[in-house]
Length: 113
Image (tube, rainbow, N blue to C red; front, side, top):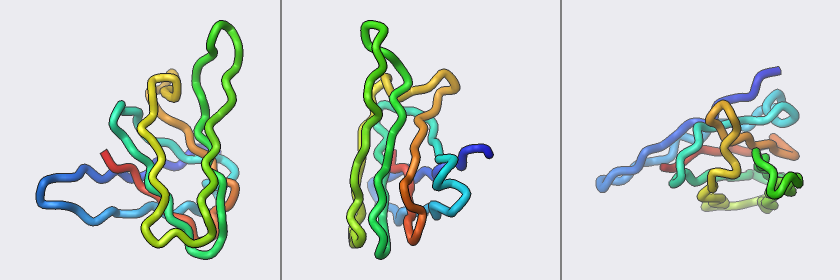
């Protein structure tokens, strides 16, 4: 199944309310993605169920695989957990960063750039 695009919020001086994307059951095993930029941050909120967010590393160092980045997000995060920025090592050949969630229950996310 295809990955799901994570919605993006571009902030301005006037401010902006994040438009959160639901992490649904189909996105949980297959993952989500967003276009790589050097300033993008991933905001993850949960509503009662903890989740591990895994960001795929796209490159090798000296021919060796690098361990993917895993961030634990607590069961209740009123403000949310900010993850990033993401260096070029997270940018896959298609120009995207790939994100996986261990649980989709009551989880939402968005990209702030």
